[in-house]
Image (tube, rainbow, N blue to C red; front, side, top):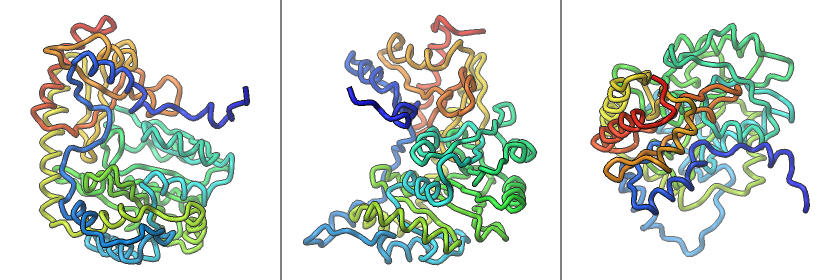
Length: 399
């Protein structure tokens, strides 16, 4: 039999999707499964985005330009300007989701064997993207007891080697929901300038900042013009995960020229999805506010409910729509599988994502799970009660 590449063997399974066969089996048995494992919002996609696709008057579904339609890039620049982020349409390249944006950035700044330092836990697919690009992820661990705040800057500096090319963050964070402060971002700025590195920020959850908190883009940090790379996407902002439209932003013209070559190699981002994404930019400001209020309420229902369960600890995040919860269990992956295969209450059960897959350090997160509060509040309240009952019945619960 022909061999499978080392890269193919090393590519990790998604902790978000790896338990899907167990969920399908539970549904086949007639159970209702509450999906808290994946960030698929149930918020309605803006109607004008769907209508724009319906109204598209096309006789040929052609390639778009490799960098994306000029009209969409100009509209994006205007959107960022409304958010006090001042760029030109030439500073961004439209990509097939934020995933491709990360691949373009890694491909343009790293050679095989180079390193990117990332605070963990982090979005699990960063591991897959880095393997694809031949990049080594170097983790620096954030602590759940501190709400997953930025680790001490000295911890980052201790990990910098001649192979280090960038520090990467997700802000607000997936899977933690942590929102970095201006002070934390400035500390990272000083470090990347000191060592002449790139700072990559995955900012796809920009609009989801709660309470009195607000999001600061690294594009607004003075002095980072040649060092800042921002990853963005319409997937969560407009509940358009299936559109697969994102962008990569940099004011570094040489870097943009390099990333454009990667964009040309894959030809173009999808035409119809760009039409939908451009139309979505016309939503009223009230859309963002209503969505933010809804997620704030959902967060409170889930986090307050989880923390009322004996032995559970869950920091209350200031952004995104994820939490990491620490559970009193022997092994979170076994527990997650048990939820789907052996537990139900009133024919209902839960699907959660074991958090171990969001860490790069072996052994971390073994009693933690990631939960996405993308269901309506009443379903989240039911999910909390299911969690309470499950922990009472699970053979590996450690009280």
